[in-house]
Image (cartoon, rainbow, N blue to C red):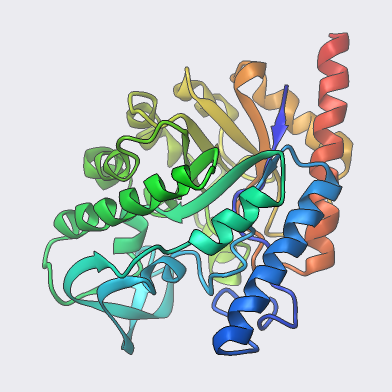
Length: 341
């Protein structure tokens, strides 16, 4: 009861890359960088196990950014001539690569990290990929001229890598779709269909992560404009409930998301965000257990997974480590309370 997992990313060690940044520069090149990425992955596998997490991820240590880390292995994308573009409906600006031709994978994207993860833990494993709608919102299109067509082109590539990850022994393949919380009507219209194309044919568990973004200033300021109730999930959850996706990850603690919206995901596993990634304050086990208790009013215990609100990439490493421990301790306290209820 109450598995524990991270949403995806974890802070990169200072010897690997710049710290506290969403698009950090690497500290090495070539073979030395490849080795350092795997060393950092091993470090976080051990840290997650030491904290007591029941589902272990790679921490996205080998990726500069959760979207661009996938795109670097895709033909038809020009990284040499990046352009500035508004991300998530112009919430913030970023330098993004351009799609300039037909999209094809150059080969495997995350084979090294996935096999390393599987080889170094006996616990359940989860690997994250960017979702097709979010990729479309994080590149400049100079070829397709149609967001939906381009999304399905990316979905095919994601499906190829997802099937390969499953063959590597990964137990859960998760697609990250923060764009679902921005383009709600489009998400319900074609975003979920593109997501299902990315997950087509998988027999491992599939998941989608939908949050309100990393704990960076642009996202924090955006949240202040959303009012007393954040009801974005209300438009997309019914479509996801009807979909083939097994698990849905959402933001909960310290958010203004009405908890009753979780009831719209009947039949799905719900990864409830019980750790705030927009604050350096470490939650107490009691706070985590209380958040789980709130979610249990709308999610059956057998379907509830305790998770982080979002990735921790820009966070201080020591804070992230403490928050992982709080996550596990809080879930354990919730189990005790539930058993005694």
